[in-house]
Length: 316
Image 1 (cartoon, rainbow, N blue to C red):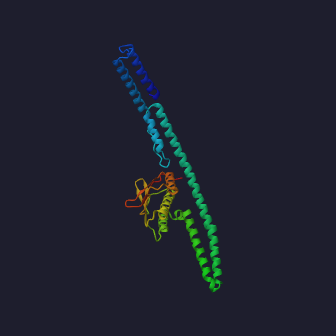
Image 2 (cartoon, rainbow, N blue to C red):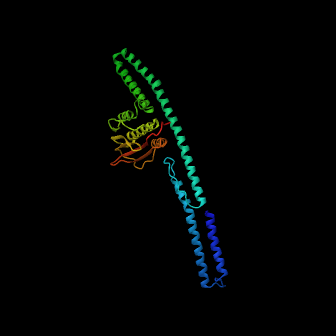
Image 3 (cartoon, rainbow, N blue to C red):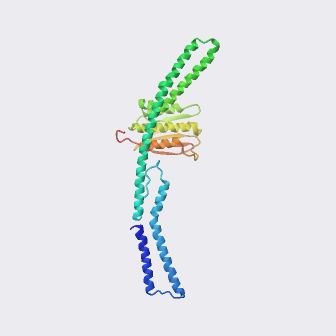
């Protein structure tokens, strides 16, 4: 029954009962007698209580819908308000759930296009850095070598310093290009790419250990790229913000896919809000239907877990 008919029926029953009583045994004198006043007050209280009960029961689904709308987060899809209550409330909840389905689908499609464009732009920038800036610096380095051979003794130290600065700039350009476009992922596969990434982030102040088996289940190219980017972003946050001296990267098979763990012994999240890096990891996880979670490590530090489902097709 709809909410309108529930309230109307209850009010009609109350009014009909009151009219029947007034036409029957109940009378109202002038002035009102105490017994008559008590009967009117009790009847009014009963009618108000019944109205309150019907409204409470009828509006409860709308209150649940309001809580569900306040807690909705498109980055954590799947939560839906239960369809219950009067016809109007059930129709409204169904419409909201349908709208949420459409929003999540459109957001996922938009995020996929944006991340695909981002990867293309990364490849373009990496190619230009390697082919143009890298070649220019290489030519400068060769020119400095020829200059150094003909430089007087008192100027050789300065020319040598210029050579070292140019060589350091060239190495940095190559390092940035590798991070923008993980060529090792395309050429050698996920296992080698993650091991190489762990070695790249290992410095004097940070030791990155890895436990990455070679017998992982078959994953799509998109899943492998997401795993690589999550490890890259996680280690970048560790190196920049966590003040950690140890980190580890673990990848293992689970019944329905693979699970990635990036753990450090730094200062932890400490109530900090999610930045663009973490938001980007969540966006990427959504694209492949993976589950991403961040939380404190068992002792101290941060755990990043990514559970990626096994590929069921050829991918797209």
